[in-house]
Image (cartoon, rainbow, N blue to C red; front, side, top):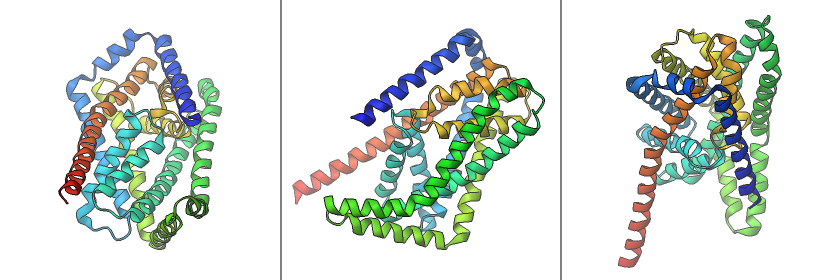
Length: 330
């Protein structure tokens, strides 16, 4: 109950921030900017994002020990449902991870492999994000060193980047001890939990012994960050805005970091909009177009996430129905 209350309060705060951002700009300019992208531009943004999900699915498959290539589609679908739950449902990142794990288990991937792969993938994903974020911080510190506005937002960016790095380091250092503690506690509550946790640790150790796979996962995730940011540049081009690709990469890398720091907020609601409002003018992008881009991203998340969750839910329901009818027939 306490966690639900905290999540509700965080969501209300996020919605308040988003409302303040829109109120400070006025709806008219933001709506005009959103309309400029047109249906083809929005469709292109959605298709580009599907490509990003495919890259992320490949990265997850790379660190899954012993999983054949024929199952790569299942891993891509797992990333799609994970992102859909994170972006559409009132969950934080943790809820999305549970849905992604369930999707893999539905596809016949053994549970210990699922958990080990998710942990390893999260590690390589966060490590690659740290590198991508450091690129953005370096560009902000050097390219815009003489801008007073940059100096004003730099502390916020540095705090967000520091939190991102701290989360990654903590996750990397404590994942094995946390599994061991969880296994010991769980064994007192449910017999067999300790053995399951030990098997996950063994699978995770197997992943980390294959260093080339871990490096490959890191590099593929790094490509995914860059490709995802490029999607924002494409959307801006459809909106008729001539802004350099490197500038958009810097903006997106910093916004990704702030979103990660606000991981308890569903979809980083409010944080994403405020970040665009602060950062975009530093690179010659007008605030209304920047906030419009943020809202277009949320529209894309709904356009991709709602059908994905509907298909996943139908699949879950069909599986449960077959199980029950099979039990009744027996």
